Length: 337
Image (cartoon, rainbow, N blue to C red; front, side, top):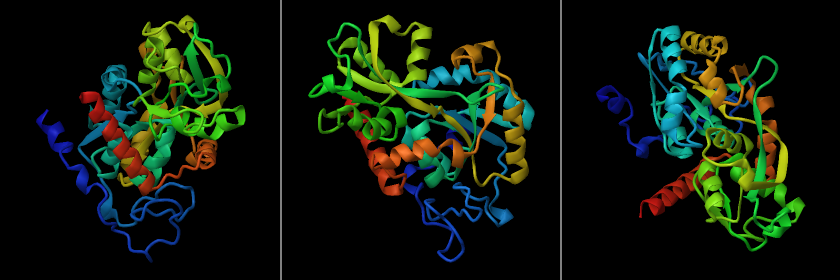
């Protein structure tokens, strides 16, 4: 535990330090933050040109998106982290993060080496933390995806989106694709405009939105279908207690990404470890039949997500991230009171 504390003790205040790149050192940066470069124009950060900046840590720090209880996923991923340690010949620890902002800040500061990022926050991680998405949970044929669904209680009088005007609707978090960005982009065409037809209330996470609808705290909530299904299969909720009144197109589920500045041989080894791993029965059950890490390309796989963000007026910039992070901190503080 002492080693873990040392690895994770860096303060968040220094996360966004001044860039090591000068303005004229990079021929193309695109939407990436100033400390990263994208000269091959694949939308993700290039590895540092100076080998002295490559990292080859003795301990690999791994985490998974805090879309639900982080402790649950530490247990689910235990067979994989044990395997990854043997495969990479490195010590591997699972770092429990409590918010999307904390996860992104951890990778940007160099404290996090490999991570599963939720769909919406993936783009923030790419632009601001130098994350390089390389896989999504899937099968031999395709990667796993999910739909944005709007859920209400089955006993409620709501049957279409426009029925929710002036009602209490919970969004998950500002950076969430299905829990916030997609509803803002897609719902207006269905006769419901977030923050105009109803006041957006942030629950913090998808599972909290679902549980809030179940208890009557919220009239409705836009959530990721895969989270909803997992909670039903675990017995946390009963599907029959809910009605789905909207279902979107399919989006990719959480990405797995490595830090851009890992030593290239180490990065290649980690990717090989991920791609060759096959989920044991308990992981397949937890992830709805997915049995492997399916290779993806961020530019193409996240095209629909970036389009939705653009349609909702969102941008994956530091300014937008700071607002998101502050909102998450404010919501967390309210829950502690």
